[in-house]
Image (cartoon, rainbow, N blue to C red; front, side, top):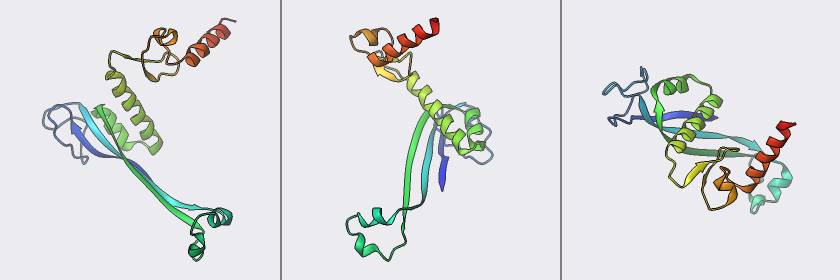
Length: 159
């Protein structure tokens, strides 16, 4: 079982909690269009493992009567702000992989909007980094490796 779904939606203007049923993407109280969301990410299942793996585990002899599979479960909550109402309407009807991609885009947008003066976005890999007094950071790259890779790519594209 896998789940990646909206748990809470709160208007960023008036702080009113939104009910998912019949919601059209705008706050019914203030007509706001920007929301803070909490997404529940959960997965569970049975995973088979081999007898060698089983017997190598401490205390496995006492468990020999159990089936040769193991149940696992994970659950976490992700938060993000600045999400538009129309994006949330699209999120609710999208398949799970599209939902994950949408969340990553929202989170990146939020992080990029909240950059501090000593942070930048790498021109090559798009990671957010803290600027230090070195050649590669000053030229817009997070590391010397990114700077060198960008220079190599530039040389290859000129050929």
